[in-house]
Picture (cartoon, one colour):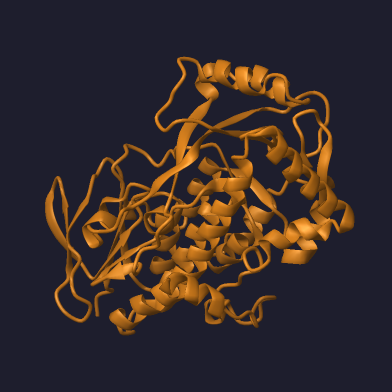
Length: 414
């Protein structure tokens, strides 16, 4: 019998992960991307142990782990350089079963896409959902410049301002502005060694992390009106962060104006009623856009692809499988979105008294127990994929999928 056909709209991290996982489970997959290439918009991405275990399922986990560059101490600092909290890479790896790995998004996209047949990816091909289909009934329909095509499954992976999401849930309010903007750069490492850090100021933060190839991935965020832009974003970084501790000014100086990427942040404050309708399903930012303050947006998209393929293996009831995907992913991602929003509120504090209290609490918690900071990621970084997706005999063969807690279920119902 012919393999069932899945069409993925969008070739970001979530779309490609879903495509690879579906392909490996027996689906015939086509990825439709409106851009002219797979070159991603962005700079670096942090892959936590939960995403690495999902990447294990497609045979990519160890390859990504080999790119880990953070070793030794790191933590959170104030703009004057004082340490607010300290974290050790070994302690984090021991707690969650793996290191934090910083990679360039282009590296991750290339390595995931390489696990698909070259003919499976069509660029310069905008696609629109015409009919979501009916599980167990008519097929879904997608329109491209070449006409209308049918699919047994459509995966909406078209980003924060998803057209597929709008077609499935036209009455939903969609994402809203999170109140801050971000900048990202990748530059050569400064000559003086430094400890990886995230620095929190008044309504602003800066992060400096090493990449395996010797470059530095740096990111910044600041409270700003939506849509605001500077004529020279490098000069804007100097204005906002040029007097912060070393190596922040040196990193800004090493970047050219064309190296600085700026994006406003949007988040899904109100969860969707479901992640599927008919034969169509959402993954990644299309389903659960979140603030980057936990570094989990891409990680959750990676999880989505693996869990989706687990539930909709060919030969199973598609409607039940998509309902199972929603039941697994909606509570978990809603909880992560809300936790990221809580961290965002702390980052956005701008009054001197409020910032002083925030920094004092962080510093005190760190002195009482370094592991207290890591607890922020309990229930997130320790996630494991569904068991049967692993090959027999692997280290994680006894892993179990993490179920939503009763508290998370109540959050979603509210």
